[in-house]
Length: 310
Image 1 (cartoon, rainbow, N blue to C red):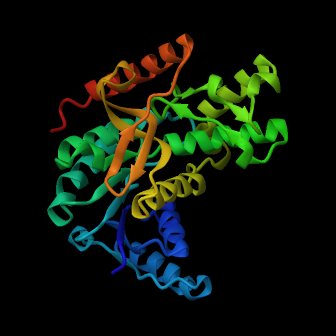
Image 2: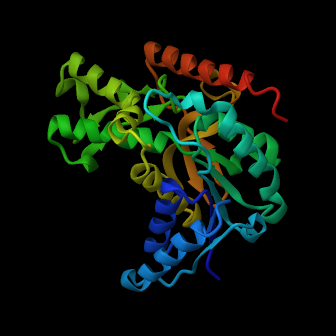
């Protein structure tokens, strides 16, 4: 029997995620949205492409949350997208109401599911979904670090002329302007980045990564990124469904790791069929550890603004 992935929100990120899952034949796909006809229409369009991909999966759309019953993974993309001039944090209360309302109901239909949270501000939404769903923390995971690290690797590859596959780079902390691209761990074809680029060039790449999402928003003017966020989400679903034990940077609940307790933040984790199976602590230089702590503090400040949502 094939696995089932339900995607909450049939906007650009949700629909693209559905398409990529179907194209890879990872699982049957259910696309959910409140807008009548939209998830059904997009699902039908994707289903029509499955024969061209040689994919046997079933793709369907619904306006009924109860149709998510029996989902192995549920991806939450629902929420407002950023507009030019907005930060991820500006979306806080509006998206908290949306994600919170959904998270309360999903376990009723899929008590053993794994939640992947994409909605911004992602770390806060992941923590809210964990709190309101009642699911174990290892089964509520935020997508952010995979995307940020992919952006970082892209910029490094462009600057050095290397193949992206030869670039090792990781971004930790909150998925926001205080994210922490870890300079000390960057390698290009096995060489430390400081042997290839100047400190000024490296810092410029770090800053571009921090504002990578905003750069796309400013160019699109009427929306935000969706191809890379969807691909990042599929990277996580693949690792879980295939029990790959892949190490990926994701938002997970910290329980003393990196000196933080009771807060979601981006860290390297082992992803497998049980969700987060291990949190890996990588060595950080003093400045990087300070930056990570500052990033976690920023997440905690946002969480403090949501005390009224229970």
